Picture: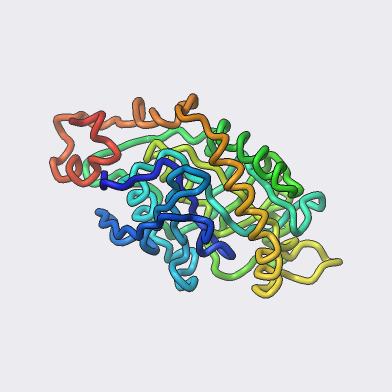
Length: 289
């Protein structure tokens, strides 16, 4: 761990590239076995709590969804002591009752991506993480309340499908996802949420509905302009919700996220390559000392 640390992190997606409310800020460059994170981590104080902020798409939004170094991002946050991650993301609605401008705190994920590194494990060390419930239920419950207190229309629950992108869906695809029972659609939740679980972090998403994707024939198909307009309106709400949340987080986690790897590592300890143990020490140090 570095000398200055934060136990809470906000990963900003489209529309939230900084947190000007942070004071006493420190910019931290973190090296990881998986390359550099999307941007330097900004650690500062929010409502008396040390909070880390990471711009998922890089400074100036230079990284496409498939180019985001998800493993480096989560690993870097782990190295600065993060235990809880709040993801801010844009999403399209696949339901008529989830309207643009609303906020969704989903409880399920469907990974429909094809070309992304999904795990920290491999290279002689195999881990099978449990993600039946991919979002931390405790953190999500607190996040719902924080968003309500911020004055937004919030929906608790829903299945979040992640597509590869960067293009938006065709109408045929959008209607298929609706038939599967998906609620919202985006491009960055996977593998970020799964990596957070491997890193034994609590993870929850504040998904901002910007459009009806392309299935809603009475609405205009989604465009970047449409997404940005809605996100700009919601930025202040997101910031209020984060302030609300950090002041109500219990000091000690009561969920099982902090012990996710306890029963996940299957490789015979004597067979794990020393290099793998060394490179993944921030993740597995307490299990393979």
